[in-house]
Length: 518
Ligand code: FAD
Ligand code: DLZ
Ligand code: SF4
Image (cartoon, rainbow, N blue to C red):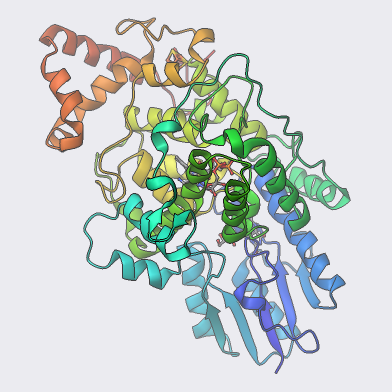
């Protein structure tokens, strides 16, 4: 039977479920570069290059194996620009009796697939996404009627299920979680390993030219493109991380340093999310390093938790809560996204650094995303939809299944506590403790009030004041609200005045004038 196997741009694994029973004698693999996918949000230029180049390399590998690949390029004159249009055209080209796809990473594409079932003549088989360690059905069974879906409970279940870092029924070393050992400041004299990345080959250079021509007005630069675009290079990146970074990963997981965007992080999320690596092989490689005495337990546990715990958890949460998940706005946040999220033109050095690095690499590490970029959006009360769109655009690893829970739930607490028991709000003291940004900032992190004071300081208290009716009964917020309760009326009024002055000066367009632009 001739089967048309439609492989999406983030499903680039030879053992993806849509290809497991591929018959090279009869079947055709369809892959399409389409404008709709690059523009449903205006993705960072490096993300589009990464996906197109990884798709072209993957298609070439299949062809080298003798598989017939029908690959539609973006500049093909007949390209309709959409998944549906290209699938319909391909059905006309190939007399296929069946279409096989793997379920997608995003709800909007899932809805498209339901339409394909209705509208196309050949039957459409949608298979489970085997890139994950916990299927949608298994997560739903775990979630059951639980009111709160906490990551830590899920993670322990996954450790038991996989047997990773387990000593019989008990966690290796006697503890499930070594987070308390993973919050160190980066010593000044410690230099993180060199991360040279992968220079673009001829295929990537073609994609760079294509993207510059078609999407050159999207956010981000192309000059520094160094992402691995093949499985071979992605495995090499993984090996380098395990050998050079994992033994120190945990200790400085939360640290930030000016001019050092990557530190000890793995830099594997773009290839991992596109299927060039599997979660299983990444976790197994880390566990092997521990068993072989090459990396300490607290670092390996911290790393495995990110993938076996957080990554699987946010994906499961996304699918159990969609399509309604994005609709809530528990803190009633409604401010427009400030323009500096695009231009990096702000005197707040922490934000200037994190946004500039995001523009240059389509990457920021976890604490930059959470405690700088996200923390500001939370404290300033930026509308969830605008923040979510920004995150989906700017990072090479962003797909809605992973971006939405992290932003809507973890950062903005817009889901009212489904994901996290309290908002991750913090003042400038946290950023000062975990980074060297404040030393080169126009603002004074120690000052609490007035024009020179670090905006995070008064915005933090203003956030608590503004949201008191929603948060002051939360037991995990008891301490800050007790401190707020002891504040004099005069000081509270000062906080509100500083916050109002600062927020009123923010602009959401490039032409505005505001005090935080350089
Ligand atoms: P490392 O720090 O080395 O971590 C290893 C791996 O753990 C990552 O590659 C990733 O696969 C996984 N991981 C760690 N934390 C998370 C998490 N919270 N959720 C899911 N996976 C996690 N990750 C994405 O892949 N895509 C996104 O769009 C994305 N958006 C985020 C938005 C916000 C607001 C926050 C706080 C986090 C977001 N993350 C996202 C998670 C995390 O920041 C990135 O996975 C990580 O920075 C990728 O870099 P790395 O490979 O060097 O990761
Ligand atoms: C992100 C992306 C982009 C920019 N372009 C394409 C494309 O042209 N063709 C394709 O198959 N996939 C692309 N993708 C990834 C899809 O958006 C992704 O598969 C869906 O969002 C489902 O997760
Ligand atoms: Fe950021 Fe405040 Fe530090 Fe400046 S002083 S870098 S705004 S935390």
